[in-house]
Figure 1 (tube, rainbow, N blue to C red):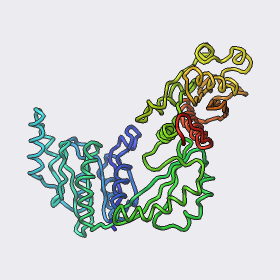
Figure 2 (cartoon, rainbow, N blue to C red):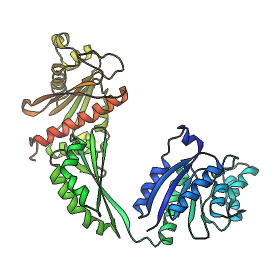
Figure 3 (cartoon, rainbow, N blue to C red):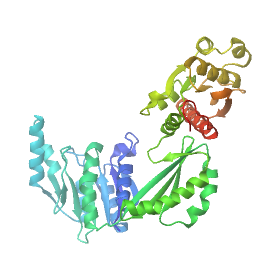
Figure 4 (tube, helix red, strand yellow):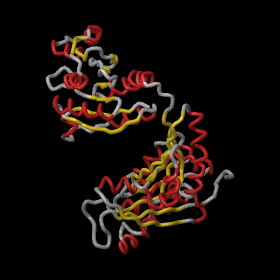
Length: 424
């Protein structure tokens, strides 16, 4: 199987002025195509350091895939370094020059002399045409058939060049007959360590498919990766393992692959014929925003009340002033009163409330920054309040609180088979 290392080029990446999204995109698509990615690197705009990096990578892998440094300016040094790494002189590639001239003419712009530099490539290169920009990509071959494939750093140019030109060349060149197929199982409300305990033996014993776990913002994903000649063969390998993992997870699993927590919630509400609304303080409508991003949500979501100020909590949600005076806005009692008030005023089956201290100021020893109370009010008088404290910045706290609110809705739905209007 072919193996590569990825090198993204640009001083702006090393200085943190530009977030490197290219390497992740390339790695994912190469792996999906059945090409092993051994390592990822970033190098600044320095031809000597880049040439050394490429030479080292070629000692370890069959080839290198680079992005960046193919522009017309003096700091675009990729081709010089690649030429040195594969021992090829740079020559003018006339068809690429004609393509650049044609593109400038189509845009009605004057082509400057330095744009000719973009058509100078390592001799004998396989050219990767670029219909989305002026700089062609190329694959430069060393005498031992190892290669360096270079693409522009602009994502809108690099992405189609990778998927439409480079990957087909690689799969044909190395006669790749299998690819990596994945299925991702999503969980919420289960800690990473607890989830690991439930499936630890599978991690230790499996080779194909393999497992990986990723925790983020209160959720944990389990990724199942199978190497197979086609999708049908991969599914035959993945399906029984996925069923086994779902059984071990039990409560907390909410869907596969493209299923989001909010789409799972909306789907279950629609299945049961339930309606929902929110009353939000510290999350400022983020829970409602997540829900209304799901197509078809209008059949179940009735509305939201963003009650940030105390007088809005009392006036629109009916939170008693005596409650606010006695225990404050960030409290179990207020969270429950907000949820119950939203359920009555919005005319919904389920209401969810949030009230907390997102910071950076406003915390006290009893109520620190990051403290959030969640209230739930459901059919038949069911109610619940949950207290959580989150670390991080104001944005972190609000994001985590939003996920926790959605998690609370999902876990309540898991615990209840109540249906309104239809049989579940």
